[in-house]
Length: 197
Image 1 (cartoon, helix red, strand yellow):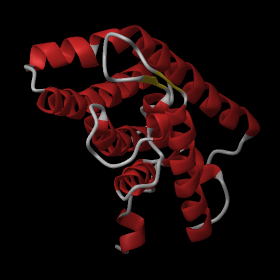
Image 2: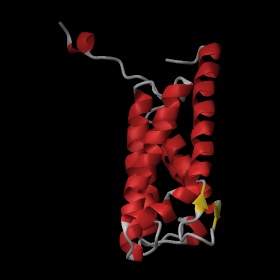
Image 3: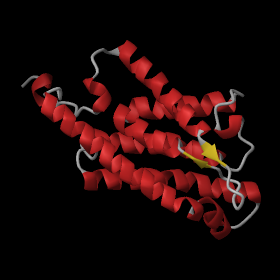
Image 4: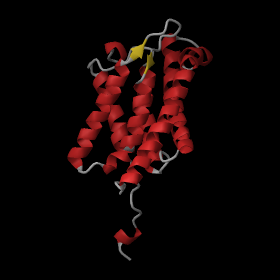
């Protein structure tokens, strides 16, 4: 039996429907980084927490799901790396690592990887599984952001949770709902136009 006959075909993510190979992947990865950057600049400072309200988390989750685990996580890692070396990509033109929300940005890379992996397993095809995908991605970002916030501010985890999670739950619910609408709808359009591979 040949190797080709035993290999399971790779499940496509939305970006795989765009023709091309390496040049496409590079362009999509850079586009993902640009999307996260632009979304991160859409940030609102809140008077009761040092963590700004930002659209970057939504961009990271959408990038991971649309581009898949490799391209999505590289997009987020490039965003992180460029900001670390001094390019002012983060919210309010920040860069480096010495600020309260840096842990969330580290979490972006892992969240994009997880969400992309789940999308590769068709979890972005219906509303309920997409809700789960988006919630897991959000929890992953918090899992990195809250401990960093606690350490940076010198507070306990409960205080960090109060400052770094509770103020954002309503916004996260809206982002998760948007993901659950956009991704399955995109796949329905693909199905109707016969573009799915």
